[in-house]
Amino acid sequence: DWDASNIIEDQVAKIRKAVGNHAVICGLSGGVDSAVAAALVHRAVGDQLTCVFVDHGLLRKGEVEQVKHDFVQATGIKLMAVDASEDFLTALKGVSEPERKRKIIGEKFIRTFEKAAREVVAQAGEQGQDVRFLVQGTLYPDVVESGGGDGAANIKSHHNVGGLPDDLNFELVEPLRLLFKDEVRAIGSELGLPDEIVWRQPFPGPGLGIRIIGDITRERLDLLREADAIAREELNRAGLDREIWQCPVVLLADVHSVGVQGDERTYGSPIVLRPVSSEDAMTADWSRLPYDVLAHISTRITNECSGINRVVLDVTSKPPATIEWE
Ligand code: XMP
View 1 (cartoon, rainbow, N blue to C red):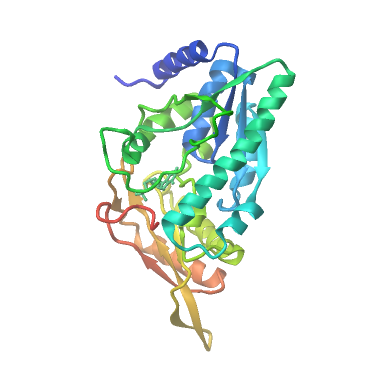
View 2: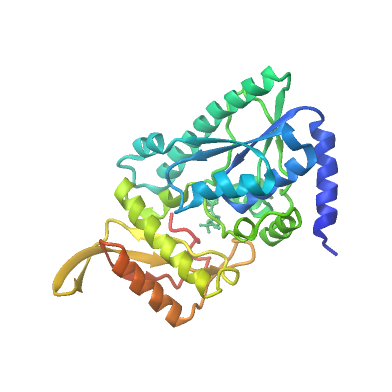
């Protein structure tokens, strides 16, 4: 007898009690979890909440606009948006090792967030408020998989806002900590968030940075962003969005294979489609997408993304493979 409105009521009461009159800050990632966590906290304490959105330049097509406009419009939440893409790309230059990428992105993210947080703290201070809480959209599977559960191994260093310096000594508010993704979606809907946000598929914190196999450049990001947008558009058009858990689109940037287009020999990189079905991302199976949808995606990507001459399908479950390639 799980019920979204009961959980909301319960969490709102708990948040109000914990937070009191203090100000609250929340990092938005563009994903469902942080959006729902923020909306829940906003329901509880209104304008005591300020959200910070860091654009690390590794986001998908249209995502920045979606957060800056659609989310704000739907919720009325106060938002501070920071464009740090230049900074991230510089730090990532020449880096191809996955855990190093994750580490750099995670650390940069914290430093950028920290700077924004200091501004929020200063602004709140001018209004006589004290920012004492940090909201995080941590879900139950994150808790378990990051080794915070019952001693489970740390499989990948999941990237959330932790590790802030001592003088930014926030207490954590994690209203989704006991929930699974489908429950978070139900709560988001109940809170009145639009479908584009509630039904957005999971997207990793390090973004497209861990979907370029090889080092990260602006050109590679643009190419992957375009291929990813095509895959999403076609899956959406085919009505498969809600059936699959997510479909990472991966660029094998350092791999080249021979192709032919028109009368020309090409020597381009492959794009991998990784559609998966899952309940909670702890395990997953590869999605048996209809062949015509796959064919359509493949044709469009090879036609529209110059430099891509091959599209391949990942048919591995998790385990043994993880959902993301890095
Ligand atoms: P893996 O690749 O570990 O992914 O099977 C499981 C789920 O987590 C997402 N993912 C992340 N989410 N920060 C996140 O917020 C991360 O660093 C991260 N890495 C993976 C992934 O997209 C999948 O849904």
